[in-house]
Amino acid sequence: MPRRVGVWAMRTGISVTLSPAVRRRLQAVARNRNSPQKHVWRARIVLLSADGIGTNEIMRQTGTSKTCVWRWQERFMAEGFDGLLRDKTQHSRTTACRTYGNCMPRIMASIPCFCFPI
Image 1 (cartoon, rainbow, N blue to C red):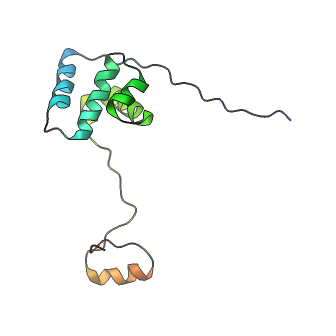
Image 2: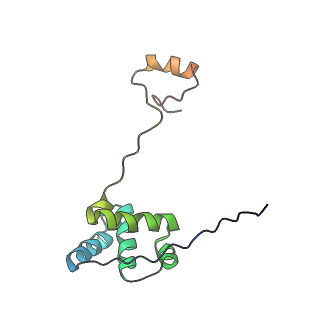
Image 3: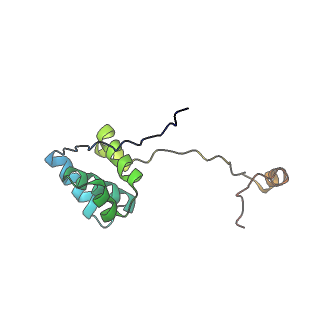
């Protein structure tokens, strides 16, 4: 019986083209000392991509993973500048109980409760 071997294909190079206005906006975010750090990383990833820098070099310069670089390149291409500034919402799997009276049934059921610090 022949053995199946999985082959991981390399990701094809992507091309990011920026208009002068979008480039200025990204540079402003990257340079602003009051910008959240996550927005600075995202802006730098897109700027470096537009300059033709490869994924490995972008990873090195920004200190992020390959999947992180790919995620923000794809998000920018799909949603533009505004997509970089918005986080996708993630719903929590556990719900915090509102009063201490509700904690006991949750503790007994071994479900974490976040009403008070441990």
